[in-house]
Length: 136
Image (cartoon, rainbow, N blue to C red; front, side, top):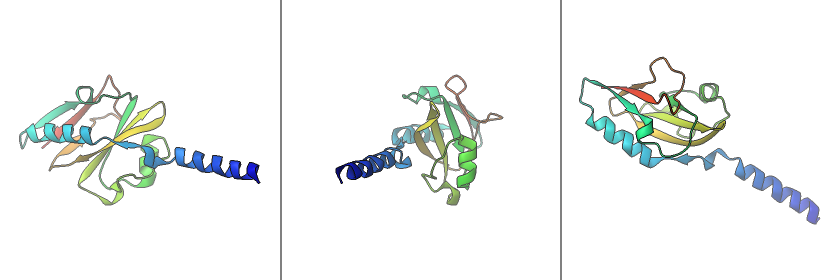
């Protein structure tokens, strides 16, 4: 009985430890990006370098556009990931997902603020190539 209970407890702890809900939403980063966007004049373009505002380890960052489906997010990011922000139903945000060692480590909901974001022709960002292009 004790062995069975130990196996069940171990399985529960394993499931809880692997839960996507443990991914940190970086609200400080969201505010930093919002402040940068507000400083960009209307009808102009600008470039945001993540190295100036990201203070954690990451290998890749993916910019997920509004209305992206669950399947497309997983295909783009390359890991199984729950749609943590319901972006498949939203047009008011972009989702910025950070990967380190093939695991999602943090994400940020980037408010559009009448802005279009792009990575130019890149699939994802890296610490050495970290520019998000902003068009207002």
